[in-house]
Amino acid sequence: MSEDRLNDLFEMRINFMEAIKKSPVNGAPPWPLDLSTKEHQQYVRDIALRGVEEMFEALQHLKNWKPHRQTSVTDFDKDEFLEEIVDAFNYFFELILLAGFTADDFFEMYVKKDKVIHERLKAGY
Image (cartoon, rainbow, N blue to C red; front, side):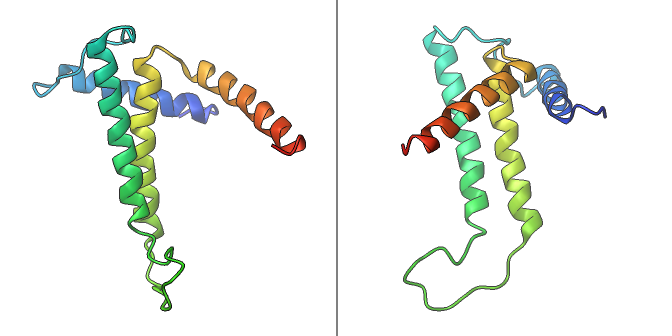
């Protein structure tokens, strides 16, 4: 591991994707994908939906979200909740890599978007 944790996360996902590529169960096309093609857009959509499914699995650990619920469930497994979020992030990192972006690309866009949302907040958006 390095001091650059974001890059480490991307490297771990790349290593996993490379291992899957060598696996007999691999159904993944070579990447980066050509997102102008129907086949690759369908593949990306499938990966995105897997990430969304993992987020829904995380949300199922939340038992007190219903506004009409009068009782409180105090049992909450924080580690299981975080594990499901990590599963989702793995799929979302994969999407970034499949599209041919790097950790630097992601970081630069994150910073750019962060400025936009702060400007919106100042403007009363």
